[in-house]
Image 1 (cartoon, rainbow, N blue to C red):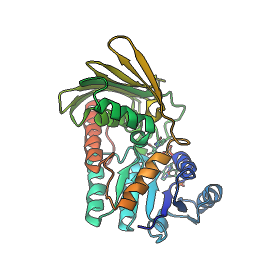
Image 2 (cartoon, rainbow, N blue to C red):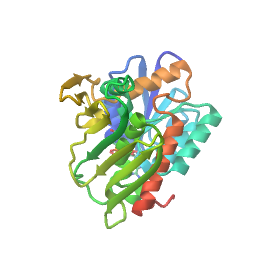
Image 3 (spheres, rainbow, N blue to C red):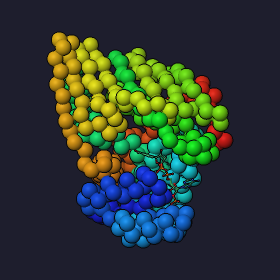
Length: 327
Ligand SMILES: NC(=O)c1ccc[n+]([C@@H]2O[C@H](COP(=O)([O-])OP(=O)(O)OC[C@H]3O[C@@H](n4cnc5c(N)ncnc54)[C@H](OP(=O)(O)O)[C@@H]3O)[C@@H](O)[C@H]2O)c1
């Protein structure tokens, strides 16, 4: 792998723009190409963010020999098809969350990547925020004692119609896949693998979940209480609780820069670890590190965990009664 990582971006929506902005802060990369279903969108995006080539269809990006890794920034329902196409084109991948619509789709991507010896990572950017890595390090050092409990919430009152990807079942709409993956993924990050999940949801008339609360039972017996909401604004904090105290990631926890450690004696300490730019540079740097070191997955966001957590989302959706056509 050359020292310069040549990125391609698939899709030109909101998160694609945020990621292209973040790439400006990442050393030793080139934004080699962008692809859109519309050549005009691709051309405009390339002009604005300095991409070398603009493709008017996704296949051309998958086949572009001047691209090492493709960032998939389409709605969740397209991730499986887009990822399989790009892997067949020999590309490494960073795939937005939710990784896919369900566990089966995730498994198929991971199996193909392993067969073709290509790097893939779920774009769970939260795991690479400096404050969150430091919080994990302090917890692992025993700062708050024996950790047995976690609470996390993520919600905002979405101002979008039923056709928007947040609520459209054909695009993988629903709170669990868009937001619930954050508390779920971070609960697994701090407390380890999940052995069981129980949830309740409030469904929209079209059957997608506008909000959900769920409890996780981790393999070591510890517990997490999580919620996600597309119809209420929530504090968006995450607390990891031990027998000596707790650590609270300040809102909005999924890109926190600050956390507080509160001890049983009432003392509190606040920590500040700023992120770079809008926060997406860190996941791009991790992809670059892995590619340069010849890794096929990131030890911080392993593929088996991505697949397992999609399985937890499947189980929760089944309890809520939320089904997608691909289930
Ligand atoms: N990590 C984060 O913080 C974060 C934040 C927001 C979203 N996301 C994730 O990123 C993904 C995209 O979200 P977004 O907010 O960027 O969505 P968006 O603004 O709607 O953009 C999605 C893009 O996907 C492409 N696309 C392909 N097929 C489509 C279809 N049938 N309908 C609509 N768009 C289609 C379009 O690009 P072209 O027209 O150029 O082909 C569109 O601009 C989702 O999986 C979401 O969960 C992550």
